[in-house]
Length: 218
Ligand code: SF4
Image 1: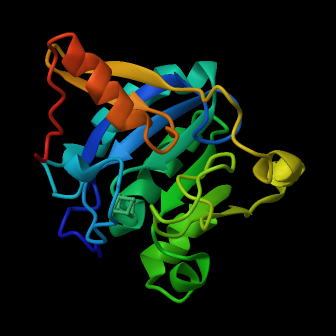
Image 2: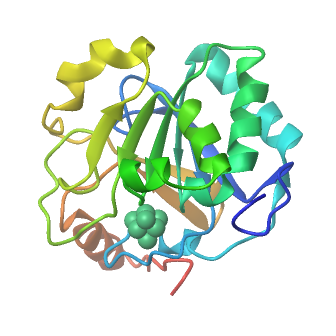
């Protein structure tokens, strides 16, 4: 069963980036999934709310395998990963057949909601080492490591990550680790968690240089 209508051997996937800092502990491989019904005001990735074209899982495994060999830490974000829980569980199993991948998942659901949810949610939770839960709230500060807003909670779900407790309650490092990755010649992704107002400031700087920033959903 999938909650998006996607086949469990396909993932509505929007690419990955390696050597990512700030979306969990250490240098990580981050991947983005599409589809989210929550529509949080101020969401950093509204272009990922609508479904796209699902990708066969073996293609996603092939893309992630190389970067994960260098840094076996995967961050799954989006979009709402738990709407594709079955496909993501299969993806993690496929990766872990070859590498001891530590997995962090961002979800707009609370852990309590996920634990009361359908079987595929339990399966993905069972494969998740670190869960950052709760919706993004633009009326909350964003000062804490790994969180988009400070209402979000970090859950260390497995023993392999319990040593990270001090890091998980630390403030966000300043300056913030941010990067811009090129997706195509006219499409870029901002990777990291900006301070409030940083995106507007970036738009203004680029606009002053004759470059218009257009969100893919605008
Ligand atoms: S849950 Fe995440 S992806 Fe979905 S709207 Fe909220 S911030 Fe955006």
